[in-house]
Image (cartoon, rainbow, N blue to C red; front, top):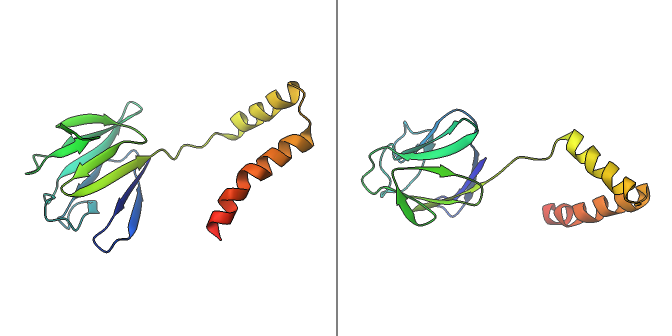
Length: 135
C-alpha cells in the first residue's frame, strides 16, 4: 500500500506502507513526519493485521478522518483519504498480478481464439500511455 500527500512546499510525497506499523505526526520521532501544525507529535499509526490495514488515532488533539468520517480506529483500503491535521493522505494499492496470474490470463485469451500477435499488440498498446507519461 502506498501513501500519497502534498507537503508544505507543494511536493507530492509517496511512502510505502508495509506490514510494520507506521506512525504519522509532526514530531521528529514519528515515522512519517508532516510539517502540519494541526497534526499532533505522534498523531496516528497505520498497521497491518490478518491481511487488513488499519489506521488508529493515538489520542491526537484534532483526531483523524477516513473519507470524511471521524474515527478512532478504522479499516483502510486503496482509494481511501485520511485527514491527519490539515494534511490529506490518499492510499493506493501496490499489488500487481503475479506471473502465474498473467500467464493464466494470456492462456485464457488464446483458448478463446485470440492469437499471440493480437495479445502482444494489446499489451504494447496498453503500456504505451504509461511510457509516454514518463517521458
